Length: 475
Image (tube, rainbow, N blue to C red; front, side):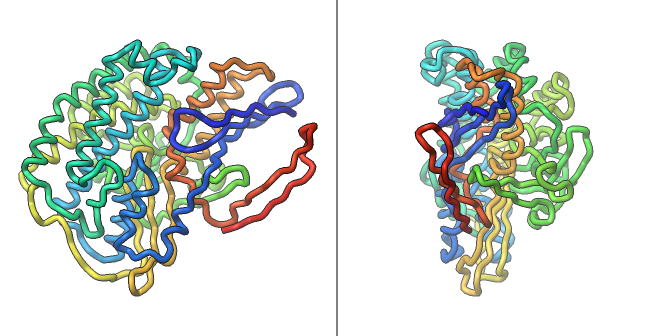
């Protein structure tokens, strides 16, 4: 048996490799997506006082720190036993929507559009954002501007673009000022126009990628996300909903906080990324997907007029529950448009300048769970504290982890479709990476495996034979 190894996987956040295992006939026997880094924030959090947790957890990621701020703060809210003032909730939501815009823009324009615009088989030296700028300068400018739109909102609200400390237990640390509101609202129309232009280009060209869409993790699964009682998308609150590709509802707007009733977490010896699965079905068959494609599949509608019109076209062209992970790209663009418009709607509400934005309290509970939607999907933070509010235990289920089973199955599907024998073209290998990029994984966020995570060292002879394996387990 021989192997094809892609290391590192490019144009993603974090460090990973792909291994394709070939049998004696040169056919693909198996494939793995390995996450090769470990960060362990679950252990780092132990011994820290509760009030530090949101800012500490924001350090998990420089791309989506706001997601961790919000999920962490919500877990702290529960431990404090407080109800966050309504305007505090709205302002948290605005910051989260802004982060989704900037993160989705980075994913689509900087990491994915080189494949779409230049071709999966194009020269890898040009297959990057500079190549995009050379061939389609307006597209590149739109991507940069949309990312800046989200980043500047985060900066105006939180004081800085990366790791803002403004989201705190009980709400946010300071109210919104009129000049901040007006400055943000002034940028919404242009951002809307840029998002709409990106959507039109994508729809005009999507027939070019039909071959890839047919095999990029195109299989039945369940989809999960947070949904309002109204059926609209919920990014910072709402009930947990899980729907199958066949339309079967497995969870219907349930309280997401007792997540251990719904999900188990498995580990494998060849990756530091956990494998969450749906408990009623078991591991590994209890596979589900989260993120943009999952969110547009589980909602009735998004909740803003332009985005709902785009969602209707998405469903008309692809069906009610499209299963190819290639369609994450289209769903991501629809969410950019929706989030831009939601920022405008929320900041136009008459009470948005209220100074009542934070509730304060002492430790009233020993345990709390915070759940929110990150750009890549549903995010869980779970803490237990002692009587003084010092963290004794933490567990994180990160959006990228939810997609781990699907990413591995997707890599295997693409490998079996494109690889026939040991001789492969570069474009075929790029497609293996591209199926991972469709999920926009954030690996620094997600490598916090707990339990028995094996570490194995292999000693290999000059002939390439493994002569000894040394292993240990740790927790």
